[in-house]
Length: 101
Image (cartoon, rainbow, N blue to C red; front, side, top):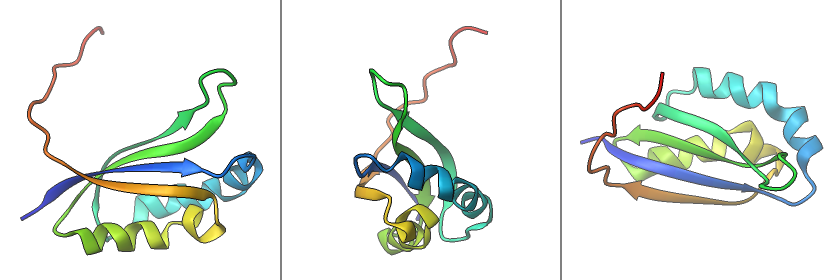
């Protein structure tokens, strides 16, 4: 049975250039990988500077091993961008309707 996972990926300090160098490969990987079902992904930003400092990725997978394989094969991981990747199983209780328009 498929589970939801939230990946909280924290970049190493002062590695913005490395992120930019590997961004195209990372985005291609997200589009073509088959380890997990990608639901949402996006960059996190430094509150004061507005520069990228990590990523949040939400996936669905049959087991934690598939999530680990997904992270291990990511070009950002292979390039050494991440200081830490936290994988958390997520028990989503409700879907909130979109606000605005």
